[in-house]
Amino acid sequence: MQSLHVATGVAAILAEVPNPAPKDPTGGSNGISLLLSYVKWGALIACAIAALASGGLMAVGKLSNRPDTAEKGKSAFIWSLGGVIATAIAIPLVNSVFSAAN
Image 1 (cartoon, rainbow, N blue to C red):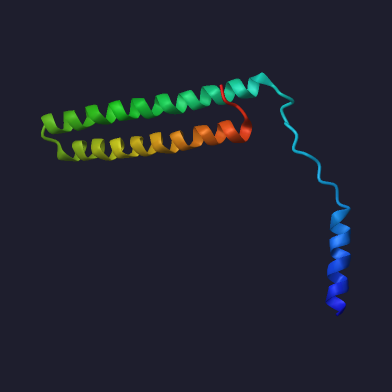
Image 2 (image 1 turned 180 degrees about the horizontal axis):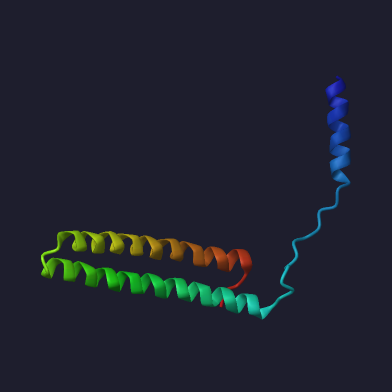
């Protein structure tokens, strides 16, 4: 019976704790949104460059009979695709969480 009184008292104390609405820490600064936009585009460009470079590495490795170079190119291509997937997931997340859709 004592635990019921404790639970009621805790609930009453917690009901009095203020719960303010979330506030934008940047104060609506366009600079932060611009910076996030540049980073998002930079990540996509880096993934594209990595995919192109790894394709070239595979071709050079195959044509010059260097199987280890071709394997590095294949591995780099897989990782660049992984980067594209991670970026494709992160961009909408950043847009929704930080309201930075530009």
